[in-house]
Length: 71
Image 1 (cartoon, helix red, strand yellow):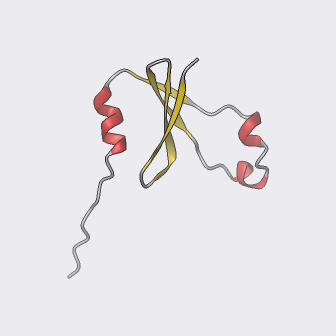
Image 2 (cartoon, rainbow, N blue to C red):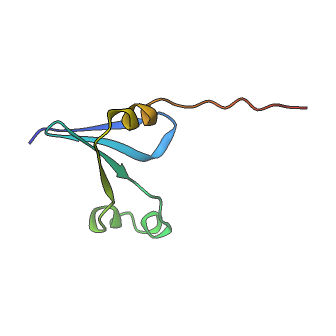
């Protein structure tokens, strides 16, 4: 099994998983229970979504910068 995890810039919640050439989005939600009891990261399953469209992965990898208008 070939597996790779890619971290996204400025996005702590999601990871890109590549398993045997197929891409998935891993949702690493920050639950209060997982902060209090870190062992729950390994005991409670995290949602994973299969990505069929490469454009979705590219949009997640590209960090969006919004300009704030002061005035």
